[in-house]
Image 1 (cartoon, rainbow, N blue to C red):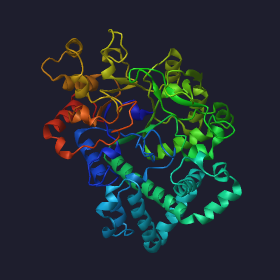
Image 2: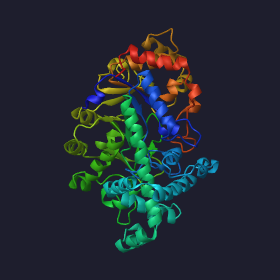
Image 3: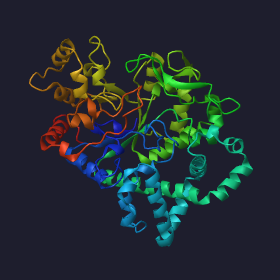
Image 4: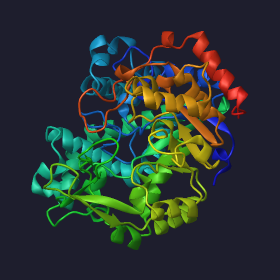
Length: 492
């Protein structure tokens, strides 16, 4: 296990889109740097985000158009003005008011400005970026250009010669769509430049960037279009089964995510190259990575594509040990954390322990059973990450408001802090625990209710849009956080 996550640390969970600012969503501008300063000043040394890939219209960061590409909607336009590639009067209210199309227009203007005004060193840097990332960027840029041409339809609805990647058709498309392809590459160049500046600033301030890798990718993605052999598809490129989880704490009918399953046989025959290159990209962006739905590396829930819910599925084995050995052989002991929530079998636990990966503990799950509940702090070992709740949970105050008096009393008895509000006592318990890393969602730092939750699993409306405001971060809340960090020796 990496030494980065074997020290006592404290973290805050906040997605980039939740940062304050004038646009529709937070971005990689000055508010992100201000947030790093806030973390540093309170002794917090880990900033956990959600996945930063380009989302579909539902805005879910867990359904991305690429396993490699960054989300250009996170690009800060003022940065482009400072580079001299975009004029301030080209950033209108209209451009900031729409998440995708108008921002793409501004970025296209910036690319023209770059081509006109960038010096030779900058142009060489862009060319080197395109060359270094060509193994995914070439397919992604062409995919996005074609997707735009075909009115954002999923690739399986494209004309057959594009759907099936006919070499001659693709060659002609690269020539015909060169401007659009170059624009996509420029967006990625800018995203990676801006992210590198933020990550460097965080490093200088002792803050580790903690990213999230969804185990599955979206069917409507450059990855599936360009790498059909990596996924379980029929001869027409269609899914016969889709991913999800059976009924659980979050949903009585389970969750039907709709992602394609991996063709593990082909992946293993190829030395898991696709997975390794995917993690290489993420390690360029982050210091620590969480593998979302880690249990899917041992066995995954396969649902017939014709089913509307996740109830009628089956567990299908996956070669997680071989994959993790290949990752270690190629990338070394990179700091990985296993999201081991849900139905966790002894086989899943054995896989996590064999590779000494920290698991996750959620305090909101701790009080529904007896004293042997694995989420109770008295049952932790140090090799874990404790949260009050995750992006899929209600805020802690919202969760508490829905509990009956008996459960609330049980929580208060366990926590032993009768003079503290229960949500403060839960934060106290997380930081006091033996877990190497304790993470609070920003909503809990700000003491916010249900209306501020990030995501409600099983729903499609109103998710992923939450943002905070600096005036919510009172001096009292900042001091409380700083006090907890110091009190429990988490200020690394």
